[in-house]
Amino acid sequence: MKDLICDEFQNTVGDLLIRHHSLIDVLSKLSECNSRVNRSVIKAVTDCGCVCIEAKKVDIPEHLESVAELKACLDSHLRGNLCPKCNEVIMCEMGKLLFYTAALCNILDINLYDVFIKENKKAHALGYFNMT
Image (cartoon, rainbow, N blue to C red; front, top):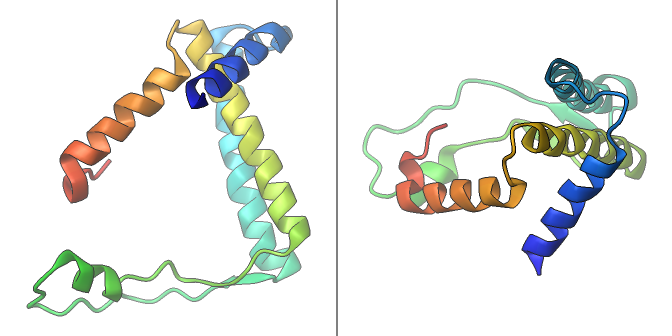
């Protein structure tokens, strides 16, 4: 079922994409959308203030016995929760990023669902060594 949703999305993008149909246009829109996602997260911090970034060096003890102990030392540096408005803006920008990712897949004749499956298999196979 999930592959049908992904395929339907990719087909819809193919049907709707008229104005930015060249590879160069899609690549530039993809880059722009990525920047807009970054900007919307930054605005949640600097403009709205619903979240903040509290970054500092993470001290990792030398003798850890498990990956679980390592994960307990890690920190996203994000504090707070997105307000509904910022959440909506970020989701909208991420949707556009997905739209142009699907558009690029269409131009290159790549199935978006196959990309998900391949990356998922790689992540499972490599586990913690999947450092991409």
